[in-house]
Length: 316
Image 1 (cartoon, rainbow, N blue to C red):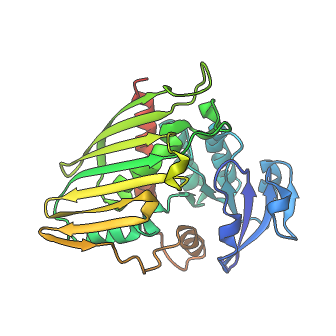
Image 2 (image 1 turned 90 degrees about the horizontal axis):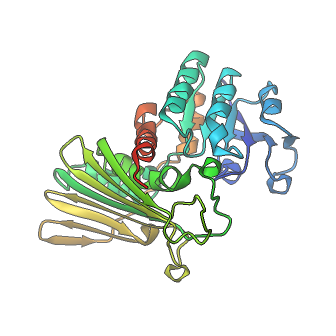
């Protein structure tokens, strides 16, 4: 198709892309539904429902942050079968069956489906990924990843609203394993707890742990929680340590602190001057036939598939 790609927003339950679109000259925001009107630029058509967007022939791409995450897989399927490309907030589905149904709908419709999964291509994770792919760490033996957010009273006690701790928070750490450390997971075990939840009998899980074996023989340890404290000065505290036979690379404080050690040499902080890759921009270019995505659909959605399996098997 000839550009630009006309984009519509559906829902505000997550990280919608309205601000990011302003930086992409090949994309144009034209419509929205179930999204705050005061956050939209002038001229954007406002609808009441997703079905209204799907009937608009000028819309090429739907960005989904569905009001209830449990409905998002169905929303994605409807959008694809209506002839729209789809870019979806994580998790795009809450069961593996739903995930496969989305992929089948994309295949049948000839439209493209992607999840908002560009973490590995933002700094410093892009630099860490390049170090791994360059073989500087040797064989990867262990990956240790943490994702921590603060507890807030607005966090839903009903996991159907956002997918829950494992699927909407720990998925970032699983992407660290597969997309940054470039290690494919082949098994997962999980524990989660509601200990510390201020809401008596609430459904919000406050902490989760996951242990995975990796296809190349290593192991990955993942921690996720809603226990980050204001004193850290960071909303989402995250850390990643990739340990190989020849060295390690690490990032702490949400990417503010990095370090590379190879053998007896401490190389200090990483050079993160390179811009990385704009994941949404790559998707827009792919729709236009002007580029390709840095991950295949299967590679992109593998972390999603594994956190869905972890959630299914989690001991509580």
